[in-house]
Amino acid sequence: MTDGFPAPVAVANAPLAATVTRVAELANKMGRDPNQVFDLRRLSEASGVPTDVIRTLLDGRRAGEPDLQARFLQRLDLLRRTRVKPNGRRYTQQEIADGAGMSRQQAGALINGDRRPTMEHCDAIQRFFGVHAGFLTAHDADALTDALQRTEQQLLQDFAGRERQTVPAEAASAGDPLARLLQNHGVRGIAWRAAQLPSDKHRDKVTEWLDMLLESVKPNES
Image (cartoon, rainbow, N blue to C red; front, side):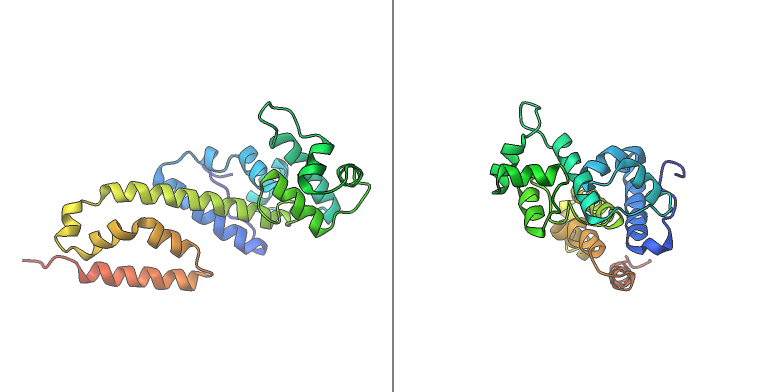
């Protein structure tokens, strides 16, 4: 870790590296505490990846990848510990079985590692616990990337709300095209969408277009 932010991730994990960089830059721009944005426990609960593996990946080092069944058991255990009933108790095997539409024997065999899960089993358990598709099966780096992208989306939404508050309504109504753009779309409509583009080349196009807009509305010098 460097100055509270993750060090550059190994190039071998390019999607994760790019996501970490964007989130770190956005958090810095918003004045957010990097220790909260990159909180290992929160990221572990969001991704299913153990905290020690997350630290390894964020430090740019390779982490050993468990096989599918080991990954399933590890993440199912995390779900049972962190997604509990309103009274704070864990869901029983019977409750998981009923909620996932399987027999108690099936649920028990999956939980105890006596049976390899199918994709149908994984989908049913994910729906029961209310987590996204792939939570139980995605490779560690992919799962962490996905969790960080959701963090990025939330930061961009927060940033959009803050930016909207700074755009004077009078400027937009006076015909300022940049102010009108921000008022109508905010960062959610610009930066958030740009962040979802598939490559830096596409994001560069957005930057180029915004630069042209800024140049076109620059006040004439007297």
